[in-house]
Length: 153
Image (cartoon, rainbow, N blue to C red; front, side):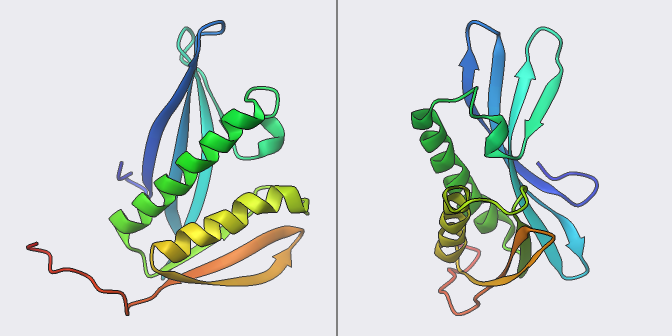
């Protein structure tokens, strides 16, 4: 989806809870951040099929009671694939991203290192900036040396 505010989001249905009638999505988004950069973010969206209310989860702390460790692993695979797809679709020159949580433990940082790998596989070089109020920050810049087929292929 291309949003009126300049954001771009890919959304993937990842599950349904028969007991609660909740459905779950993974959203990956590029949003306007700076004059020459977009901000990357990802979230799990919980939608109540009865009330139509939604909750947005940006931290793994809040989804521990909802998803098993095996489900969390599978969700991470969707996030990584969706990230590459979004970057291939929009091809921004510069991207900013940061952790949702402050001072995340090493275990929580693993998903961010895997996201760094996803960015690299999509043709970006990454620079890790100094933490800002405990949030970890990365800048990604598209490498223009990768082969790109002509648009008419």
